[in-house]
Amino acid sequence: MTPVNTILLKELRSHFVSPVVYVVGAVFLLIVGLLAYLYIVFTGAQAIQLMQVQGQAQINLNDLVFRNLFSSIRFVLLIILPILTMRLFAEEKKLRTFELLMTSPIGLNEIVAGKFMSVFLLFMGLLGLTGLIPLTLSLFSDFDWYPVLTGYLGLALLGALFLSVGVLASALTENQVVAAFVSFGLLLLLWLLAGLGSLLGDSTIGQVVSYLSFMEHYDHLVRGLIDTQDLVYFATALILMLFLTHRVIDSTRWK
Image 1 (cartoon, rainbow, N blue to C red):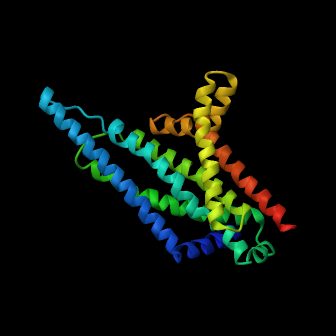
Image 2: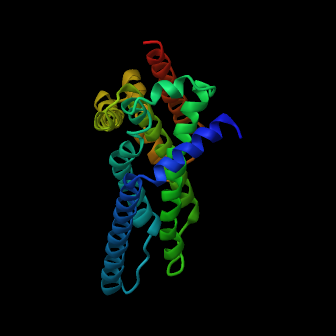
Image 3: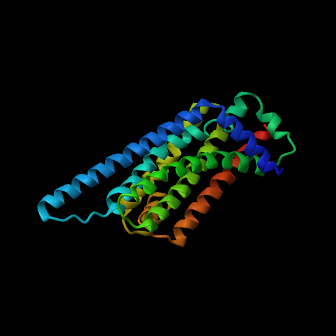
């Protein structure tokens, strides 16, 4: 068994014995299910109105249901994912097992990768359960699967970015609540960069600031546009967050 798998299995076991994971998962699925239901009901009401006025209804489920749903889920992830990551390193420091972990034969790269992969697999499991929504809807109506799949790709990449920021925040403190708030604050800052970039307009600075925010990159994927620039953004941001986590932990090891 590789060192990464050792850390991964250890973290997964601790996740599944923690009630926090079950509460977070239940809340996430409940909110996503409720949002999907509301968007579907709203779309059905629009179809009925068009039938009454025009005698026929052509409804685009991709625009009215899935695009709105994917746009709303990012708000949910902004709140939910910092709770999943807050304990990763903070709990180790609080329980005084951090020193034991640092002196183990497992390398620091493997520790960071294993802890990140544990929460990412949890997130992907929850995301996979939401796939029942388009599968069920496909039994009753037709829609284009391509933007739905790219939307899920966007959610996976966005979730990975959010989780990597959460891992970094957890490495900065031994207080889990503080770690959650730091993660939320950093993600909110990245979110607000999109608005700042809009205020700066089409200037070079404005374009750079807008690029640093995940909003535009995620929106492209939700609309069914796969651009190498967007994929490079998420990959670079993920690697940067994990690298900073590595540096933070490495610096605290020698204190």
